[in-house]
Image (cartoon, rainbow, N blue to C red; front, side, top):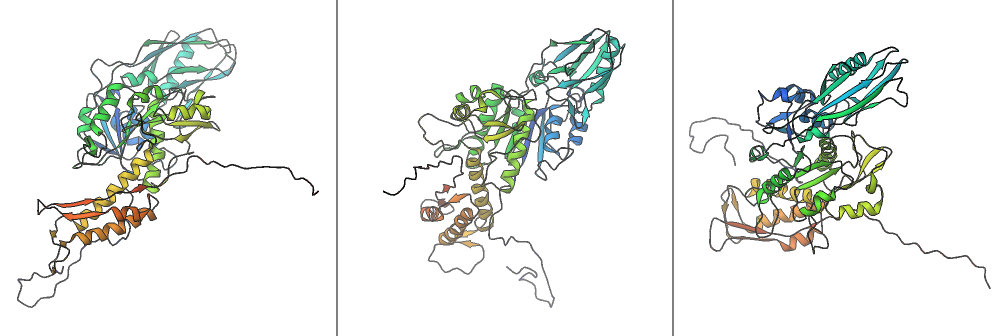
Length: 503
């Protein structure tokens, strides 16, 4: 359409207009967007702005919500000081106000004895001996009293900006308090490591107050609006009220009555990555067999925070989904998660096989790091031999198909007049069913070329496009497609025999 000069103009003039268009013959991958649901520190609660906030660094998260807070703990993994993390993938935090009556976890370290030699001891806080390259080591000098050592420990903790606790000391006792209140604070453990030489000093760690309380996330979920948050990091772990709220809000895909974010007029669903340090997280997932929202990020028997496991998996999955959605996170390792010497039943294939069949993701421990084996949703309904929505990869393929289709609709369908296939029309922005069908035929080829689907002809032969017989303003399209598979098991049979001489 030439609109450099309006058709109504008469007087001599020269006009030139420049516009924008997309001439790409392939659809882009669905842009990933990570949403964080987490708390701010107690010190930041009074002035907390609960509006969604774009984050670009852990430093920004610390400045806004407190260093060492759950939001900061997650961001230091997504956007590490060293390394690119999730790169340019947008991260949006939906900060929560602390639950009414919530409590911080308080632990004491009681020191007895006097130092008999110079030694270096260290703390293990939430499974870490250091945070952001700052070590939790403290030096004791021969003759140090419990009160002196307690002061050194307290100073060591408070000097670590990203530590999840703050500390005070008095009379040989250190009191360490999590920087935020809530049940998630209960995951912050403290140990003192002397590497087999106490140098006359003993340390006793005890809990005086348990972390408790979980915010209601409903208000934050309502703020999602029309934004397509593809990945949600649930910092609250396997708290039933939170899992229920996520599942209800996100809904389920269904041929007849999709709900929540899967409903036709919204169709912007997400995968809620939920960390777990349980040896067997299927105790949480097995009862959620008909839902597709929750995906466990397992870190079995880790002393780290479950929310850190969720952040690690989100980092891996977001990058794969952004760049190569036809692939998966299989055999990718968590970049930053405290790991134990043994992970229990997940270390054996039979254990992982049993766990994944109950709707939980699995990992193995390879060279001291958690390595992803299965990344799945809780979906495993009774009687469905091959669960349609078991693997998160499957959902991301469906999300990509929808996204590419949406872009084509915006360019070729929305705002167009309708005409029959046999009509001769010279006007602009007129669409015929056969034209749209041809566009979708090309789209099927594109999806197969990108490795997302298989058998383009299957989708093409299923295409039905028509103007409604009851509503002249309604355009109807139907099609089916086959998702591509992903190699998860490789089975080979070899037959051997002996080499006998000739008779």
